[in-house]
Length: 337
Ligand code: OGA
Ligand code: NI
Image (cartoon, rainbow, N blue to C red; front, side):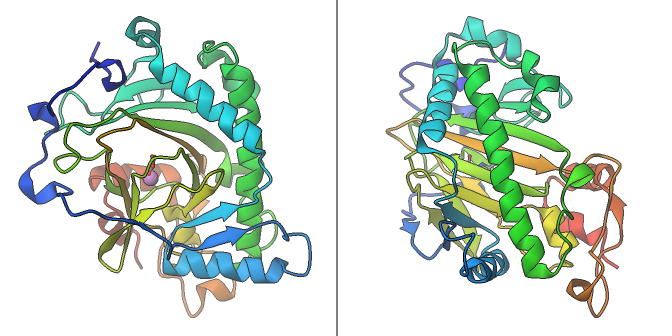
């Protein structure tokens, strides 16, 4: 079994295999958390302010391809408990975690380190990741960790609540770009994954990354950051830090939303830098279309004067994405009309 970084103790210097080539290092230049990133407050979503909230989400998606949401309705108790069981999972002994270790993309619950390509990659990323399916719960829960004791109960509740939250956001997006209610239900959002990143303190954050720069290929993502900085988004060619706001969710429209909106909504390029002092855990929830569903720019004014992408299946998109080194622009070029 490859050694998970979460089971390393007292790492004094960065092992050679984690040191990036000079042109790919994040460097020593400090990137502060930015307060430019839009913060959407959902408290008044059911009142007359709804249309204003819709507009804020659309503007944030166009300008940043990423935003934070507060007063989202998922209780602080649940977000804290979920963070608690996941941190406990990563703190467990290597022998306990070994049975979840897998590099198989189709495994229903997989724990891995760096990327799924650990054996063959040029250099490693400073992270461990646990990913499992979570919708519908009863089809997948038997594959989840049974320890910590409340893992299944807490993560099941979190999965249900985070799904509701993402559908609230998707409905607001539907309103904002003129799609019929329910456009994203069913096959469009069939597969829900929880994907948890864990990074232990890194001896030299200037030389390595916790996650490479990327766009999320899915429909939509939400992230619950802990209280340690690390997530950065690219805006006008500059990296900006996404401040960890207690209890907030970061929402990132995925590349499928970019295509369905005919390029009107953006999907932020983002990456994760490491921290020298504190370990960092982030809970990602992703909605993915089912493999065989047809994705294309939606009918209606959003696609006027003409669609700029051809239709494709998500399977086809995903294979182009991996074939293009997970690079968004070259992947999208394959589907441009
Ligand atoms: C991801 C991602 C960011 C983070 O999992 O796709 O971008 O802060 N995660 O862990
Ligand atoms: Ni991402």
